[in-house]
Length: 194
Figure 1 (cartoon, rainbow, N blue to C red):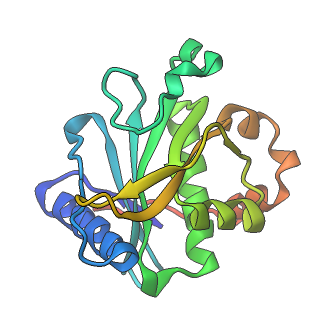
Figure 2 (cartoon, one colour):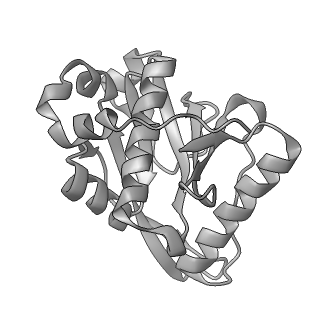
């Protein structure tokens, strides 16, 4: 299940989850966070007990406003599409990092595709999240560049991200080729009202 963070209280909760997952992963290193404002859709993942478990932020992609470390606009089919969405702040809290929560994340990503007619997702994803989405759910994530190193203010490497594209229109049109994703839709979850 999930809910939109669309008022001051829920947006505050959204950023608290993002900050907590950053600290779980990288310790107390300062997070260079960007507030995207109104142009993005902030989503809080929620489990069956109505506990907040993670976040997503979906942002209409435009090369002039993107804060990503990779130039996705250098890829021809991204440059030619007007239905590209950037995924940011995809987080799962450590206490809730079960496979079922990742299944919920896949459902959220695909429901967003259906609701907003997304042709491509662009995302700089952490390798461990990418591995789970690909290995467990067969999610068609395509690496399009070299690893991007995450560094602290002193230049120490904290981790890395992989620039990726997901051809969401293709997945939507050929769902039978992705049986694990299709199975998730069979047990479809509903939006929790904020």
